Image 1 (cartoon, rainbow, N blue to C red):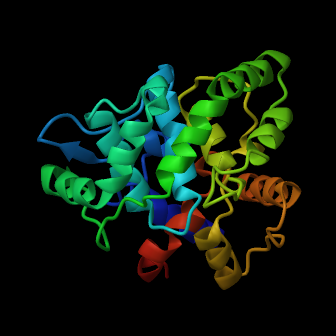
Image 2 (cartoon, helix red, strand yellow; image 1 turned 180 degrees about the vertical axis):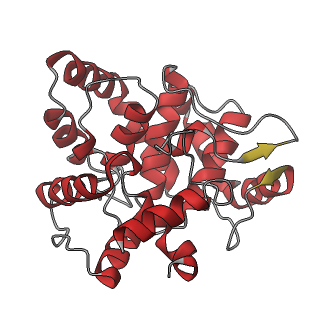
Length: 259
């Protein structure tokens, strides 16, 4: 099943938006090309060597840590970049936060109307509670950068993982963002921003991945702590390598092709 799943992913690399593979079929990272074009311009992407785009990566992970479809997080991040809302300091303006919170439904509709490429499976919505999380990211931004750079310098990303995982408010309400932390590291690794990020820290055992694993008989631990998330991430990487969790995540979209 594992080999068939990998083969199906490779066969769909030009058809499914989140499957971005290199010529030798390794994952380029989701943020390298969202397959979304706004106002008929170049496809949306994040250059994670730039601070503003790195900031958007954390917002993307925070948004997707909620109960939501991946398209919502992708289009929201696209909206922010297209409207130059990718500068951390501007989010210290309470009036801006209030305005964006109040108009999030309207802005989601306008974004979809101006975008081509990805066809959402369901109606796209921008959750109003994400703006409180953006404020939390901004509040901790300098420290986040210091922790990330320290992890790179010391060649040890575990303290960074623990630090990010314990920040309250990056999930819904006071909840923490734990499961999507590997997403941040994976995207940085895929773009070669930090060359020493272990692949075993880069697989996301979210609900969709866990459901697939159970369905195909692939053992993953119960996800109830950062330790279990990392254990699951390691198991996924040992089996799928530089495709990370993508085969398991994509299963729902390609299972009819697996024989």
